Length: 119
Image (cartoon, rainbow, N blue to C red; front, top):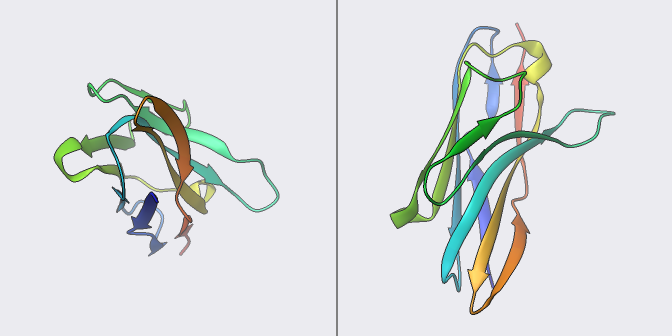
């Protein structure tokens, strides 16, 4: 069984920073794309950033220049460094990964971690 476990969420003041981590564990052959999504109250889940196994990244326009996604393939871990946080960044942040097991790729989600930006 595969699990994605997030950590690093919390309460931060506007302009502050947080770093989220997401570690994958279990019967993993390899991990393809990994990413972070978020869902604010009353809104749909939206893509924040993705990173390929080779390190290519993409970002939502709303976080470009403020957030940085990275990964450590040896640790099966993806990170999201969030700087200059604003109240509109408040949401539950979810980690996602496409994981290869044998010849098949499966989609996995973490349980989510709350990020609250407030003074």
